[in-house]
Amino acid sequence: MKARTSFFFFTTIIITALLIGNTAGAQQYKLRQVNSTMGMKSESTIYVKDMRKRTEGGGYMGMTNLTTIEQCDLQRIIKINDKKKLYYIELFSKETEEIDEDAKPGAVKNKPVAAASIQPKDKTGGVITMWYNITDTGERKKMYGLTARHIWTTQKIKPSPDACTMKDSMIIKTDGWYIDLPQFNCPVRYTPTNMSRPTVKNQPQCMDRYVNRRSGKGKPGFPLTETKTMIMGNGLATTTEFETSIETLEFSTSKSDSMLFEIPLGYKQAMSEEELQDKFDAGEMMKQAGHINQGRGEEKINLNESKKTGAIRVGVYEPKGDEQLEVSTLQQQLINTLMNSNVEAVAINSEDDAKKYNCDLLLTTNFVRVKQGSKIGGLLKAIKNTDPSVASTYTIEAELTLANLSDGSTRFQQKVNGKYDGKLTVAAAKALDEGCSQLLKELK
Image (cartoon, rainbow, N blue to C red; front, side, top):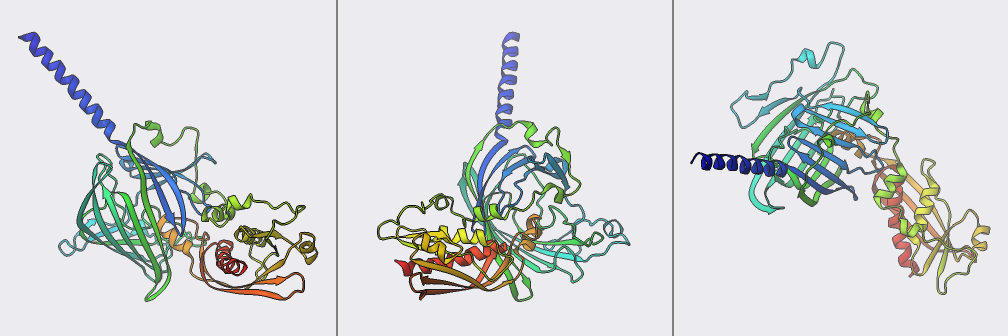
């Protein structure tokens, strides 16, 4: 009897240990997601283990592709540049005043730090207030074996006139499906500035105070799909509007090495996030934006050979009209876009080049007007602490003229006039794409 009892006891321990082991394994996840911003897409791989999350990839617009580790148990984020072997520690903010609008008057969830500790006498700054409303639609569906909730959120952010980290008001509307990951419990950070408090260049003594006012019921959780519409402007005037989205491509349970969630050995700590960043790469931004087609770019014409039968060869000059533009890049962009089944395009510097290369037509491009509007980078910085020089909205007017080489007569002229997003050369490339599409219709 005693032996049977002992056997049962040890069997229970073994079974319990196995169950605990399986449960622990189930708390480790691996996801592959695609992120879309302003027509650009990038993939990221996410690892989750207990209260920590590691995100690799997801870089876009030519910016540094950092690895981030959220150590929710330590209330901090580690940002890592593997290329430089540097890391930067960002603490979760404890300076935000959070007010529950649905609670009794005067209820404050997180009591703000004393004003003296937030804003010393030698510092200036204003108040950034954010109204956050969450709506649980009640819809549920199975996604990757887990129950996902359909949640809508609206964030309205308004800086006071003396605020230094933001100047324009902002609205962020989010529509997403969210799940709970057992053991992964990170504080929900409602404000787009709360993951980091960016320092303002030339205003090192400026520090804003943040106030969150929450309303509505429900909780987001971990996003499997999510779409954000961001609107930035002053009053009724909208200066910038664009959309970002997240889509999960893969979701699985996977054991991960604990060292993936720690600061890598041998790496040095950066003194600022700016030190962590690489130099902005405009060429990579255009490549990711899809404005330099690698396939077409490799389709070189042998200028020593005759044209294909029935083909029209166009000699393309460098665009003119704005000294800030990367004209050689835009010239190649025109060539890549014009390459078609019946159109060949080559770079030329003169009419003699065009004759030597047996061109039929000459393409000249003149930028009549290039005016910078609102900075999309400023909005992205408020949301993801990115470089404010990344992208802007530009009003661009350009004329593309096709002329016959034989007699110099104009065959077709296309005017482009509109607003285009991106860094200057990227925005200009988008305008040229629009013009070239009309030229190709004319050449058919």
